[in-house]
Image 1 (cartoon, rainbow, N blue to C red):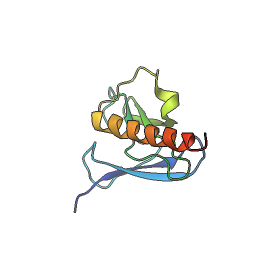
Image 2: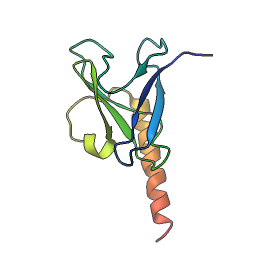
Image 3: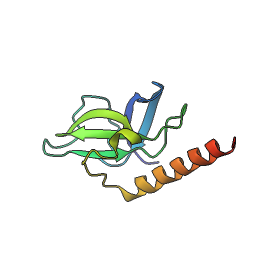
Image 4: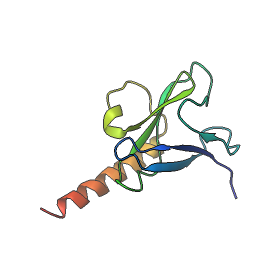
Length: 109
Protein backbone atom coordinates (compact mmCIF):
# COMPACT_ATOMS: atom_id res chain seq x y z
CA UNK A 1 0.00 0.00 0.00
CA UNK A 2 1.43 3.37 -1.03
CA UNK A 3 1.30 6.69 0.73
CA UNK A 4 0.05 9.80 -1.02
CA UNK A 5 -0.36 13.47 -0.36
CA UNK A 6 -3.85 14.88 -0.98
CA UNK A 7 -5.24 18.11 -2.40
CA UNK A 8 -8.56 19.06 -0.76
CA UNK A 9 -10.76 21.87 -2.02
CA UNK A 10 -13.89 22.89 -3.90
CA UNK A 11 -14.60 22.57 -7.60
CA UNK A 12 -14.21 26.01 -9.22
CA UNK A 13 -17.30 25.43 -11.37
CA UNK A 14 -19.94 23.80 -9.14
CA UNK A 15 -18.44 24.15 -5.65
CA UNK A 16 -18.53 20.43 -4.85
CA UNK A 17 -15.88 19.26 -2.39
CA UNK A 18 -13.06 17.13 -3.81
CA UNK A 19 -10.02 15.20 -2.65
CA UNK A 20 -7.31 14.16 -5.09
CA UNK A 21 -4.25 12.11 -4.26
CA UNK A 22 -0.83 12.96 -5.67
CA UNK A 23 2.65 11.47 -5.57
CA UNK A 24 4.20 14.73 -6.73
CA UNK A 25 5.74 15.55 -3.35
CA UNK A 26 7.21 13.59 -0.39
CA UNK A 27 4.10 11.38 -0.02
CA UNK A 28 3.90 11.82 3.74
CA UNK A 29 0.09 11.88 3.97
CA UNK A 30 -0.11 15.70 3.84
CA UNK A 31 -3.48 17.29 3.15
CA UNK A 32 -2.89 20.40 1.01
CA UNK A 33 -5.52 23.16 0.93
CA UNK A 34 -5.57 26.72 -0.40
CA UNK A 35 -2.77 28.76 1.16
CA UNK A 36 -0.67 25.75 2.21
CA UNK A 37 3.06 25.69 1.44
CA UNK A 38 3.91 22.69 -0.75
CA UNK A 39 7.34 23.54 -2.15
CA UNK A 40 10.26 25.99 -2.23
CA UNK A 41 9.48 29.69 -2.68
CA UNK A 42 10.70 29.74 -6.28
CA UNK A 43 8.41 26.87 -7.35
CA UNK A 44 5.41 27.93 -9.50
CA UNK A 45 3.42 25.60 -11.77
CA UNK A 46 0.05 24.12 -12.69
CA UNK A 47 -0.89 20.53 -11.83
CA UNK A 48 -3.81 18.85 -13.58
CA UNK A 49 -5.53 16.55 -11.10
CA UNK A 50 -5.89 12.96 -12.31
CA UNK A 51 -9.68 12.92 -11.99
CA UNK A 52 -12.26 15.59 -12.80
CA UNK A 53 -14.89 16.87 -10.38
CA UNK A 54 -17.11 13.98 -9.34
CA UNK A 55 -20.24 16.10 -9.69
CA UNK A 56 -19.85 18.21 -12.86
CA UNK A 57 -16.85 16.46 -14.51
CA UNK A 58 -14.87 19.72 -14.77
CA UNK A 59 -11.11 19.05 -15.04
CA UNK A 60 -9.43 20.69 -12.03
CA UNK A 61 -5.99 22.29 -12.06
CA UNK A 62 -4.00 23.17 -8.94
CA UNK A 63 -2.08 26.44 -9.25
CA UNK A 64 1.04 26.75 -7.09
CA UNK A 65 2.70 30.19 -6.95
CA UNK A 66 5.96 30.66 -5.06
CA UNK A 67 5.47 27.30 -3.34
CA UNK A 68 1.94 28.08 -2.05
CA UNK A 69 -1.33 26.48 -3.23
CA UNK A 70 -2.79 29.59 -4.85
CA UNK A 71 -5.97 28.35 -6.56
CA UNK A 72 -8.04 25.44 -7.75
CA UNK A 73 -9.07 26.37 -11.29
CA UNK A 74 -10.98 24.74 -14.09
CA UNK A 75 -8.81 23.76 -17.04
CA UNK A 76 -10.44 26.45 -19.22
CA UNK A 77 -9.21 29.16 -16.82
CA UNK A 78 -5.60 27.97 -17.02
CA UNK A 79 -4.94 27.37 -20.72
CA UNK A 80 -3.16 30.69 -21.30
CA UNK A 81 -1.70 31.23 -17.83
CA UNK A 82 1.95 30.75 -18.81
CA UNK A 83 2.82 28.48 -15.87
CA UNK A 84 4.25 25.06 -16.73
CA UNK A 85 2.24 21.88 -16.47
CA UNK A 86 5.07 19.38 -15.93
CA UNK A 87 3.26 16.06 -15.91
CA UNK A 88 2.53 14.69 -19.38
CA UNK A 89 0.53 11.80 -17.93
CA UNK A 90 -1.88 14.26 -16.34
CA UNK A 91 -2.33 16.02 -19.68
CA UNK A 92 -3.20 12.66 -21.25
CA UNK A 93 -5.75 12.04 -18.50
CA UNK A 94 -7.19 15.51 -19.03
CA UNK A 95 -7.52 14.92 -22.78
CA UNK A 96 -9.37 11.68 -22.05
CA UNK A 97 -11.80 13.48 -19.71
CA UNK A 98 -12.43 16.27 -22.23
CA UNK A 99 -13.08 13.69 -24.95
CA UNK A 100 -15.56 11.88 -22.68
CA UNK A 101 -17.34 15.16 -21.93
CA UNK A 102 -17.57 16.03 -25.63
CA UNK A 103 -18.90 12.57 -26.51
CA UNK A 104 -21.53 12.90 -23.78
CA UNK A 105 -22.58 16.34 -25.09
CA UNK A 106 -22.90 14.99 -28.65
CA UNK A 107 -25.24 12.16 -27.63
CA UNK A 108 -28.17 14.59 -27.60
CA UNK A 109 -27.51 15.88 -31.13
